[in-house]
Structures are given as structure tokens and as C-alpha cells.
Length: 122
Image (cartoon, rainbow, N blue to C red; front, side, top):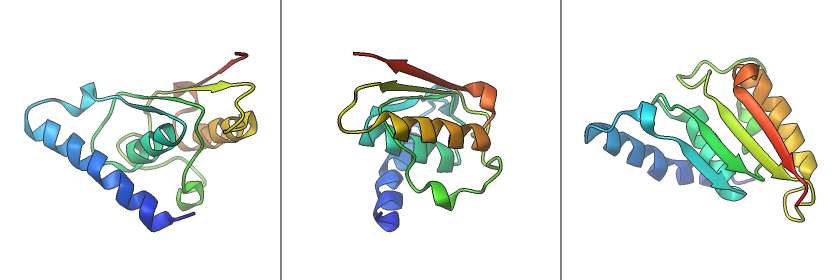
């Protein structure tokens, strides 16, 4: 996995959030979301940004660079961020197992009550 590339790819999104905050748009009104790789980057960005965000919603994604996070709860501003994770049971590109492993890891990093995992059979 290209750790440097992943971290660099998150920087423009963090910069966009910072710019919106400077323009007067409160960070607590910016929700990150995405599908597949976009969901993976949204999660990574939200867990590493210095801006307090109100939530993440993502579909069929996985946890990028999870080994770089502590084993216990994260200490960042988004340690209590609500996360809605949805995954297709028959997803041919991102197996359901990846989503299941991601949700279990997330529950160890953020408030478990704030992590919602929904599966869909279509």
C-alpha cells in the first residue's frame, strides 16, 4: 500500500475543508462521503483532519492505513464522529469481509455507538 500517496491524496480534501472554514462555513456542517475508494479516502481524511466534522457516510469501502492508527480510541477531534457504513452483500469488487473488518476496527477507534453498519442484498 502506498502510504505516502494515500496521505498526499487526503491533503487536497483537508485543504478544501480548511478553505471552507476560512470562508465562514463551519466544519461541523461538512460531511464526508464516498463509494469504494472514495469512501476509504473519506474515512482516512476524517480521522486525520484537525477540523471537527459531523459525520461520514460511505458505501462499500475499506480502512486505508489502519495499522498506522493506535489500537485504542483515537485522540483526534473526530474521535466521536458518527459513521454510516453501507455494504452490498454481493459486492464483487470490495468483498463484504472487508466491510465487516472495517466496522470492527472502527468500533475500537471511535465511539462504538456512533458506528452504524448496514448491508444490502442487491
